[in-house]
Length: 339
Ligand code: NAD
Ligand code: UFG
Image (cartoon, rainbow, N blue to C red):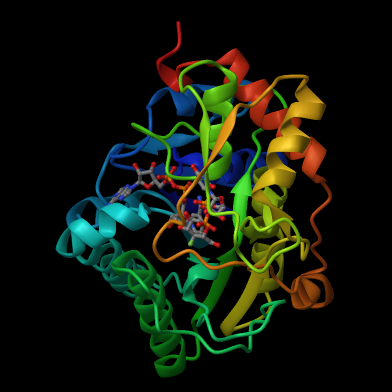
């Protein structure tokens, strides 16, 4: 199938392109490079030995999308494109609502008009209401988001849910990611945040490579085994494979389908530090800092539905994630700007 991958040069998008190409799908990427490097396209080609078509365009540009759909016989779109920094979304809500909602609406309108009604959407564990008990299940309550970024995911889900309800030809798959980390084992693609990382693993990796001095552990007085926050970290290659499984499922299932993509296992911040240190034989200096506003003590998924319905399960463990994160960072100390 020819798959349109919006945000395909980003962290998760690039790994998914590799997985799609390796499974025999053709890939067309659209990305405006607001948070990624054009070098990614050649790295995807180098890993897979296959070509991909790349358009440097904004997904909100209807004319550009029309041209892509006229030129290519797109069977399905995977919609990764979006802004994703929680703190930035609090400071710049209008930019987040504009980018994340208008890209979703423009893409769905264009797809409908070109009679391509299969979409997979990058949603997030952040859509779950904090009152739910772990493990989080797809049927649990959503909403009560704590920041504009989370609301854009919640609202995008609703836009696509309503679209599927109104027209039974649509197949809408909402994938709720937990915490993707790691990198392709080749070390050619990985996570390359701009500025100081917001997320734990890129921060640890940049401490390891000497770009940052020490890790701040945000709180050690949570109600968790060691007092630090617990999350469901998932290897990005496993996450990418989840998208291929979702395409296979979509081929004969219409309507709206929601799946968690996580491992179902929670690790604390200190578990992450210790695993990274042991696997890579590098010391990670850290200091205990105050809690970060908006953080929950514990989140992890129930991966049961994805296993039963999609036949997908994460294969990589925490040591694999720590090894591959470091393999990427050590080979590319300044990310895609290295060399
Ligand atoms: P990323 O920033 O690396 O990738 C997103 C890509 O989208 C970037 O390459 C960026 O340039 C592009 N983009 C943004 N707005 C665009 C627009 N209007 N037009 C064209 N391209 C645009 O982020 P990622 O970690 O790969 O995340 C991919 C998706 O998964 C995002 O939608 C994100 O919200 C979602 N998600 C990520 C996480 C995570 O922890 N990384 C967790 C849950 C959900
Ligand atoms: N943490 C630190 N120090 C840091 C960074 C993070 O101690 O420098 C801690 C956090 O307090 C938290 C854990 O590490 O306990 C994980 O934090 P991340 O920022 O890596 O991940 P979050 O779970 O907070 O959020 C991420 C994405 C969201 C997404 C969510 C999905 O940033 O966009 O996963 O579960 F919605």
